[in-house]
Amino acid sequence: MSLVVVGSIAFDAVQTPFGQRDRMLGGSAVHFSLAASFFTDVRVVGPVGDDFGDAEYAVLHDRGVNTDDIEHVEGGQTFFWRGHYEYDLNVAHTDDTQLNVFGDFQPKLSPESQSADMLFLANIQPDLQREVREQASPKLAGLDSMNLWIETARDSLLKTISGVDLVFLNDAEIRMLTREANLVRAARALMEHGPSTIVAKQGEYGAALFTRDSFFALPAYPLEAVNDPTGAGDTFAGGFLGYLDSCGPDAASDDPTLRRAMTYGATLASFNVEEFGTERVSGLTREEIDQRFEEFRLMTTLDSVSTTAD
Amino acid sequence: MSLVVVGSIAFDAVQTPFGQRDRMLGGSAVHFSLAASFFTDVRVVGPVGDDFGDAEYAVLHDRGVNTDDIEHVEGGQTFFWRGHYEYDLNVAHTDDTQLNVFGDFQPKLSPESQSADMLFLANIQPDLQREVREQASPKLAGLDSMNLWIETARDSLLKTISGVDLVFLNDAEIRMLTREANLVRAARALMEHGPSTIVAKQGEYGAALFTRDSFFALPAYPLEAVNDPTGAGDTFAGGFLGYLDSCGPDAASDDPTLRRAMTYGATLASFNVEEFGTERVSGLTREEIDQRFEEFRLMTTLDSVSTTAD
Image 1 (cartoon, rainbow over the protein chains, first blue to last red):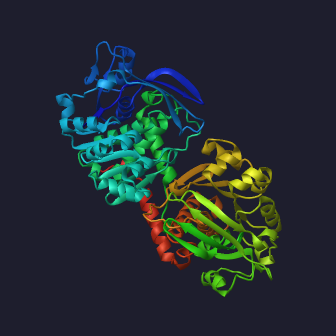
Image 2 (cartoon, rainbow over the protein chains, first blue to last red; image 1 turned 180 degrees about the vertical axis):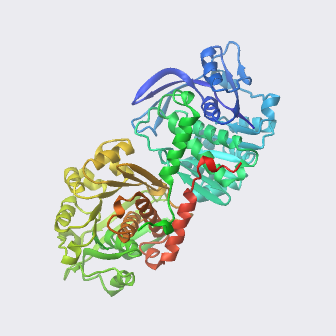
Image 3 (spheres, chains in turn green, brown; image 1 turned 60 degrees about the vertical axis):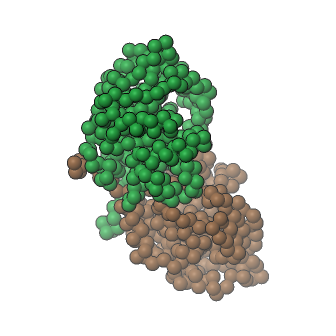
């Protein structure tokens, strides 16, 4: 099986109450592919500039990520984002955005990417996501988006969503997009546009999974120290789709498999926020991941009433 | 086993975007005791006025709640609260509070209440909670509180908390009380004051359970229609402690039992918000409750990786 992600490759400058980095590898496609790399073969599609060098490629190559479809724009500079977080890490502020080569990005999928089993459209302008979707013929396509596109390109986003199987959005974004205050009804409404599976990300509260006939919810891992939430959502999606891709062509219609995919997504996201940028995830082992997966299972285990011991 | 609750008995006038009631039975002790009545013998301690009549007593008696310790204040009026909720039901506004007989409430526990197995101190002034606690000798004591007392009587509240085993608070209140932004560390800090178990209520996101060596989290039941959240927290506590009391003296130190208690609490709370006031819970059957408990179990079930079918 194989998985392609189309999105941003970036340098980030991030300040949180717990530290800062002036320039570190980031971007949705990077976070996604590192997380997915623990489970399956991943290809990254995205543009970089002359400032993207061997050290940055090495982070991806060390995790076996295929970078053949990274487009190097001669004379250009890589997408740059600077932001800071408040003491409440749920509140992020963007201080500077330099689109650079990302501003003119016109994704062209190679034949290998066109025929990959799964495609993830990271958060970019929905028209562009749709153009990518139309170039490829995956067995399963997923996307992420954000409030900016819901506000400025809602119709286009809904059109793009009608062409994918799986949507990852924050719960507030799902409500905003469907104009429905109740999350259960909002998720149902979104499914009516086409997708069979909706993942509602809920930050420090975990995530919920809606399919046509099932509901699953998972808390966030109870971390005592969160240093940098940047990339948590893309890391979640990478763990989710990476695991799903590793389970074969029918995985997306199997409820227990989807639930394990949720848990791998949450597991990778929990590691991601422990350190800045890609620092924690890039150095993980599958053993550490499976151990935290098992902790998730234990902390949500509920016996039926009939097993009462008293 | 037996359970006593000390708190408010009230008439509520509530308006939500989905309807309104001008005068209905409410109050923390009422919501708590109705929920607990499905599992164990409950006694209510609280004051009422001349306006509290047979119809109100009947709601409690029909569920087998013992009202011998309800104090009827001659010539007085029962506590009255009027409030409304925004379209986002998490935002409540108090429009009128008439303490009436509740303003001079000096709880006196009868010998039966003093010797009950479990005691729940619903949200009242923490000095008063402590006076009640000192009159009784339960095997387990729990309490609820609110941001008002954290802001105006923090030291007293912490002193009261040092005398109980189990604390029910919203997650934001736990952070505020301990002055610790991270919930895991905040719950640990609160346990250092004495309680062995902290329940962090998270509204539409469910609830988390912290003990000295375990963590458990449960999502909220995915309701498509929520009509009135009034009393959900007390109903949660009532389902939790009612079930716990029914499991015998060692229940509070048994992790699987505590998790089932969480789930019964969440189950009762989910029914409570479906209709106004006590309307839904007062008419429930144990069969309906156990059925929703089982739905909770199914919607949180996560297989271990080794059971992968592919």
